[in-house]
Image 1 (cartoon, helix red, strand yellow):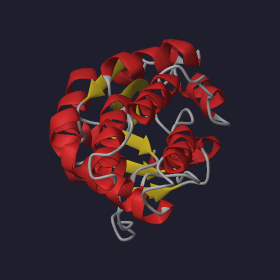
Image 2: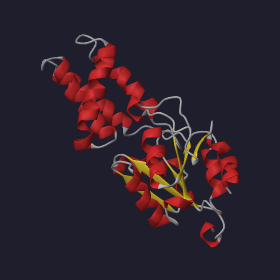
Image 3: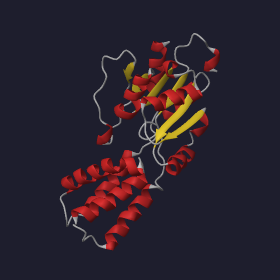
Image 4: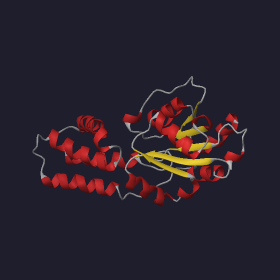
Length: 238
């Protein structure tokens, strides 16, 4: 395995999960459209989106990332924009929408399984994802790709320290590790700060909270169109 190859620059590869290995934001956007329809008598959809995003950001420190916190933020926003007049029947519909999200099917993105299979024998592969523990475990089990990983890290948030600890626990430290993800803010920038390589895989749908500027001039930053191009990046690094 990679640990037996002392001259190999990258021995460990971390992968984000949501919208990197499987679809996720699509289900949030569908639910937000349903939420806007439920609140159409109280607020315009664009303004509702702004209020919901503000509630989500405000609540991250309390609820963390994931569907449960999103559902609570929808309820809070509904109460605020209706000035407390929202019917309990609408609250019930919001709760049902959250439950449906927790049961949605897992759709692995193109090239993900083939890429993991190709890399599994030569690198330590680590899933590093943030969100609700139960939901992330459910999606991993349903994805059919869990056996490719040598380590699993489900974290409350992602920081340079997160990557330092994960890559030291499962590999040869951040300097010999590479992180792959669709979020510049969570997957790429903190991994680069920790001393790792960072590979950005843009997704058509990315939560606005995760937007950040590309570190174009960073020597360890790379961008690919899809996961099928990851092997080429690894060949350049080696």
